[in-house]
Length: 221
Image 1 (cartoon, rainbow, N blue to C red):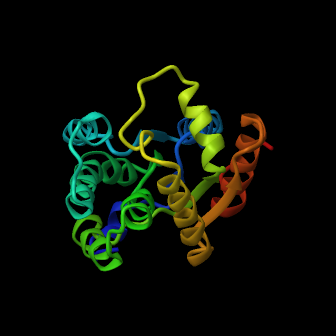
Image 2: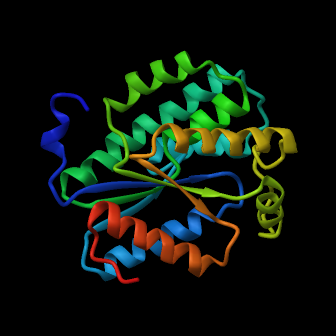
Image 3: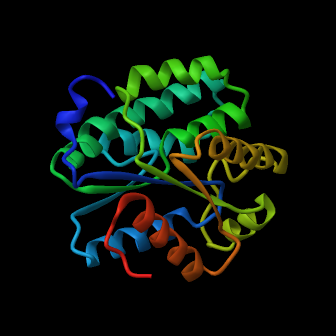
């Protein structure tokens, strides 16, 4: 973190991110986890990426529903532009206020999707992250792991128009899964791989247990 960052995070504040491919259940589990934290008496903010701030939400519409096919570097720059707005307008103020922040996707998604999925060079990702994040990293990242075919079946069953990423082929989604698994293996102190093929309540119970064990949250089993 930058020199000023420690002053922004009280001992109570924690930053938890949920990651995974399409249809893995991130949004559902983020809602469940945030509700459990709130029920335990902790101040909590649930947010998402891309998005989470007005400017970031405008970029989200372009990235998920626009018809443009960007170069991987340009696409990563858009994600990090949205992330910077999110960080400055939403995440840092919440952490500074002592809140737990539960975020549906963060920088790991850009590494998985644009890096592993679209071939963005790691050096470009690292440079954008250094410029944008001021050293901020999640306290805990919960990676929901699901075979791509199962995730796409779930996503198509929502009855919503598919996003740009959902319309990409199975090879792309296989690379994303491999990317998330590689991230989890490379950073075991921060990341935990969770089997998301099970019923939602079983996954939610595992996530509560992980947040309780890793971060000391007073959550029920």
